[in-house]
Image (cartoon, rainbow, N blue to C red; front, side):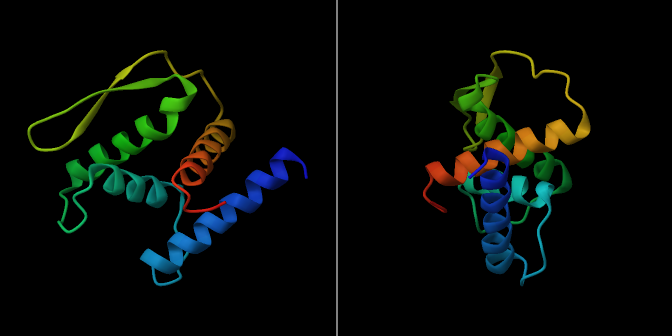
Length: 118
C-alpha cells in the first residue's frame, strides 16, 4: 500500500474513532484532534478551559506530536502540571496543504505509538 494511502486510511480511522468518542459522531477537524491530544498530554481531563488555555493545550499537542521529528524537546512540567517544550529547530516553511500533511502524519504516529490505532 502506498504511504499516502496508508496515511489517509489511518487518519480516517482516527477521525472516526475520536469523533464517535468525543463529538457524538460529528467529524472532528484537525484543530479539534490537536486540542484533544493537548488535553490528554496535560492529563487534567475533567476541567473546563478558558480560551487562552485552549490555545496552550493546542501548543502542547503540536510540540508533543512534532517532538519525534526533532522540532521540539520536552523541557519541564511547571507547578500547575503544564508541560513545557523548547524549540530544537525551526519548522520549515510549508504551504498550507503541506502543513496539514505533516500534522496528520505526526498525529497518526502519535496514535500508533499510544496504541490507540494499529
